[in-house]
Length: 433
Ligand SMILES: Nc1ncnc2c1ncn2[C@@H]1O[C@H](COP(=O)(O)OP(=O)(O)OP(=O)(O)O)[C@@H](O)[C@H]1O
Image (cartoon, protein in one colour):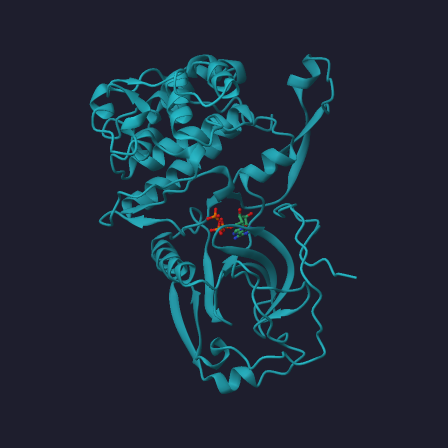
């Protein structure tokens, strides 16, 4: 019989894909000599109240840890992920309680810190060299953010990091579910506009904070925005009540607190770095990235626009996996791309245009289904009006600023925070009323 490792944990952040791992025998020593990583210096760095303490331990101490404290060494899975079981230790200090998520860079586990007696989230990075290197950059960024985020409210806080069995492990404060997880668990029901305003303000404040530090996140999406608390409340869903409630519940969940923080700085870049490669997760990718025009701070603001629409509607705005279809969707929702950007499109992108001018659409569509997906998208104004009852005008105006095709004309984070959508007195509403 096979043991099913790491699946079906009742945690909000869990990836529900089944993952079968072979049974491991805990009571026999590993058949191979311990890998190099175990003989290496065990290093870690503790970050508390802005002070950094380095710990260097010769491997002799580390390998001397009693067997019941650290599990036997076993090989990583084929993708370089660390293989673990719930309840075992990750170094003598942390006990693994559950798996919270998985991404390109590694797995995130909930752990009990036996030293500080608190739960933390630990990102166990894949052992492949490129991910190890990216993790060191992420640590660098996290430390820079922590140094300047005096209130600790903008970005997830790093508590510690260490190199364990060839896996860089980053210890974070434990946060609640991501905005994406929350929407998904709520059958993709939209958030009320006053909650969207609260979330939007905080996202923009975090982005402005990063941009002030000359950092570009490049991977803003609902998956990378976490609610600080998991607490939620159940409220009547008036949209469902006013229809026939066919198939839907009369109630929906809303977060009890709107406090959020940004996570995942694995793709964050400094302003002066090379900006020619492709960035951002597809749905949130700015037009200048697709056209190969190079990118900078404004690519984050485009992503914020996509996120705000998704929070209002419950669904991703540009649901596509292909460049030409993506550009066609943008034109359907926002109007034609400006000529000065089209003519500068790089070698890979120029094939999406006819005679270098007009988008090759619908002629270049790969299927009828693709044409339908583009055709059914409404204009931005109509889309917002479909989902928002009050403040629709202000929101449309804000989104038009965030969705300016030309990155030089796109609204900046601080400018967006001064927009009437945020500054008008909306006190009589409040999203829990
Ligand atoms: N501090 C935290 N508290 C709670 N859950 C977290 C925390 N950090 C990460 N997670 C969970 O783990 C998931 C993966 O984290 P993260 O995005 O940092 O990993 P990644 O490998 O860099 O992902 P990606 O593939 O998007 O680059 C998140 O979507 C979230 O569900």
